[in-house]
Length: 151
Image (cartoon, rainbow, N blue to C red):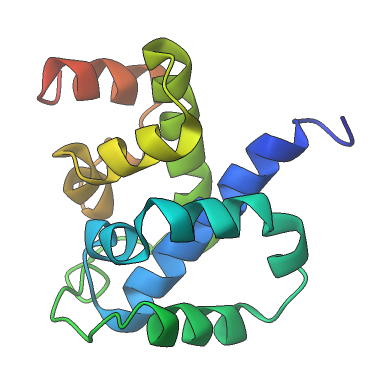
């Protein structure tokens, strides 16, 4: 382990941040990006995160948009935000923690858990930066995810 967290957690952080960046660039809900990339595409970027992390994120984003034919959507959670907009790295960290926690509790693989979490009700709540869900602690987010509603 180099640094404060394992390299696989750092890889998950990069993948979640990349999903956020692509979602913002294409104006799509994050589940659209996740579903377009599919299990194999997500696994590819997760397994090679150390390499892609060294690349220009705009270049990687363009590659993903073209490779997976991600259309331009109309989802723009940034425009609706009246509070400070968190960076894609900040949201990547939020999602990394939530996916990791969910994977630990479900005993499923990281990528399968990521797909399930991104397709759940909680991601649009986290994407609403006018609410508090994105900066709540991970245990609260996970308990809410399991309950199927904000607690």
